[in-house]
Length: 142
Image 1 (tube, rainbow, N blue to C red):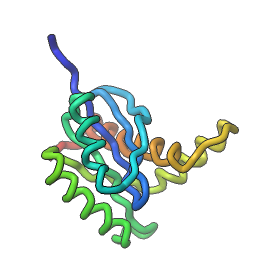
Image 2 (image 1 turned 180 degrees about the horizontal axis):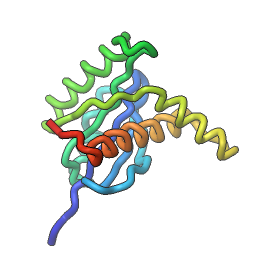
Image 3 (image 1 turned 135 degrees about the vertical axis):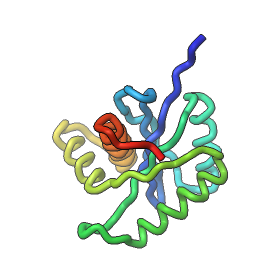
Image 4 (image 1 turned 45 degrees about the horizontal axis):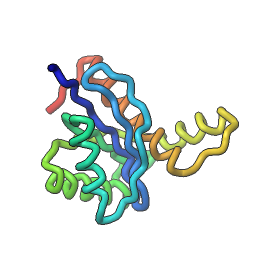
């Protein structure tokens, strides 16, 4: 039996982590869940990695509007290092410019109630989608 593998997208915030998933390499990303960014985060991600046969993870890299690093950039970079060590899986960084704004605008356009968790999960979709699109257009994975 040939079991397919998946890839996760993460929108890492100080309070929550939005999680998206896609079948590797040609799947369409979809929101999966939102996890609390607390000491149990790596356990929640481990469960998903095992259940979904995750090949690698893509995390959004926040930056300022002029492209410089911010406090959130540093927080995310440290979080990624910590998660790579705890999970034993490669985590790539992907520019996440305006993904939260795009997610909020999309959810508002649907004229239905939504929460910050919904925004975070949809932001993770956009991060993963951007990563996969770049790879399909010739970008290499390290």
